[in-house]
Image 1 (cartoon, helix red, strand yellow):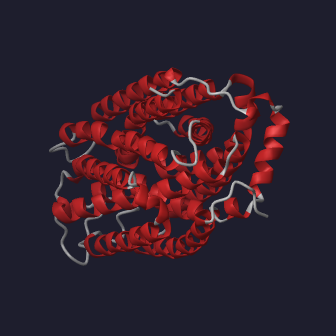
Image 2: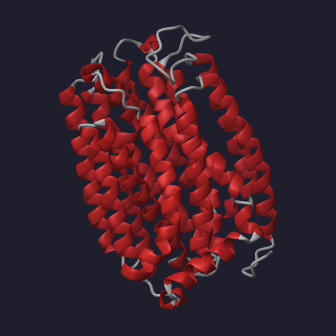
Image 3: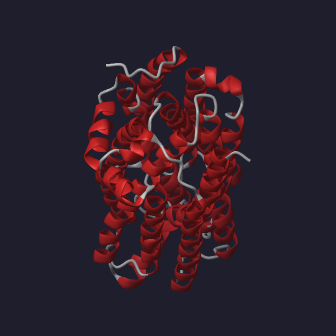
Length: 419
């Protein structure tokens, strides 16, 4: 088997295992925190924690190049996994100061993981394999939504509230799985590129130069929307499901099955995008995803209580929900998230020919993505569900326009930077 394809496979497997732990924690974090606050009298917010993590992720992107230059891509990825695992483990006993400090550390870990992921995909891909390899990675990554959440669904079944023992066991398992995934990243072999001989400052300058490229700038609206949309799907939506008591007093355990179906939608979307025909229909596919995302937002507008983002919601929504409707929304959010995330990342891996350019493209993506998530997690504590839906749908329209323009440039594909 080709060495580059082996690397893509190991990248996908390690991401699947690592993010099995992360997705399990992310989907249950606010529900766990609310139960923890009730038991201890503390005033902790997982939304604030993820906001801190997101801004640390944005800042951490600027440190990736020198770290990679010193210790290599594989070791940087490994350290990122360890930092993410440490953040997950904090939810075993989420004391306010410790949790917020670890949010900064976890944010730097996220920057190491995601920027190096983009570089690894770029270095191990060609013009013809970039889209395929991104699909392989995304299938592995989002399969992580399936396994940990089976545990949540069965272990939390019948529970009116989350006990301390449930909290500890769930987070301990999630952290252990994430740690295993971190060690699996060491199976990825370094593929040398011309940029490996560059000095750290030269890499940083090259990355900033790429940031001025019109192609990288057209990624920005998609990155901003992607940060808001994925934060909603990964953190806010599961919290709304667990808080909606109209589903029953044991609604928290529906977080598990909802997240599983999100994962099924993610993997379905990734498999669909393996088709070579999709690469010539990117803007159309992004538009179709926009329509499906609008449908999902309309359904939860009708079937979810408006205040479910802020507290356990006992008020009735506009229409009484059923678990079938909740799972339909989960599938729609999963399949659209895979499209909204994969198409821009595949574009970055395909349209830049060198590691430094890919680093620049991923830095542009991660900085704007992280800052958008920071804003989203900040306003979540103050903005009701209906207003959040309006915000993300407005950003989706801007992302559709910018990505369509980018796709027209990619159809006239050129490796020469445009200014």
